[in-house]
Length: 388
Image (cartoon, rainbow, N blue to C red):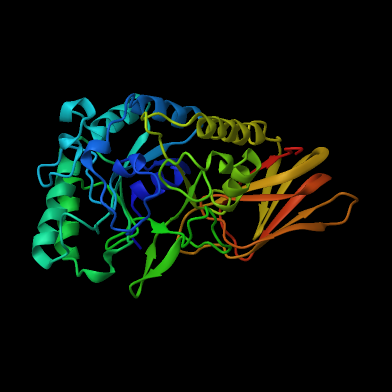
């Protein structure tokens, strides 16, 4: 089974930040597919600073960022030659600005992997009518994939595409020709898959090898979610819903801790800056992740068949982090036993491991932990006491 190096790299990214920013930022109350017009004259960020965004991404420990380049409304965050509905016809910088350029330059400056979101479907200025629409789609995608250097990740949103039969073979050929090593999210010839909800949570089990159009395929999952309760784009009305560090840490355990990636959305405000409440939550979350996993407990490991034994000094332990060698022959169940009083006590039962399984349980004193898998497999481990 084919596993691309870039897919394994994606799993190592683990955590990314999504940025929904565009003309909808300046039109409070707009909802997907409500067909309300949004005038080009409204788009005018007074202090757009993508470096401000990406520095926060870096400081929070995230490894990648994804920018909405065109949402369902059709507004292009770059001066596209194939629509008048773009930054080139707005008051911002007298039409000379390019949000995509600012974003990719900032990502490269801070060594953050670059993801570009594009909604294949849209309402308004272009109708969904066969080859003409596919031509428009491909022309815009080629602008994004040829004018901005190497792009790591192309994020397609499937919402609204149900009524159009895309020439997917042609589209994928064009994309792969422009960027042979690019990762594609979720659609047509995907390298990663949507986890199935927008709450930042992966189910258990969460296999890496799944059925896709009748064949088994290696497709790591990504868990996207919002920093705020209801809105992907900025709103004045919902700052009180910014997630707490405790909730974000829970999402981390239910996404990265279940072998998936976490993609956390922030909507930059009408200045073009990160809202301070969202920035502080992002940074505090990154600090909490670093704190929890900064001081691993030393141990000696021995392997006997399908059992991994971890021996350390007698002490409190509340986390075991596992990572298996990624092959089609996945582990599908395991148990963790501690020895608080000489006899083994089961403290955790799990399913899949994949890139990472964060196994958290109530603190227990032990000098030995046994991890018993349903089959022999090469597995790495770390021990922690978070004490939270």
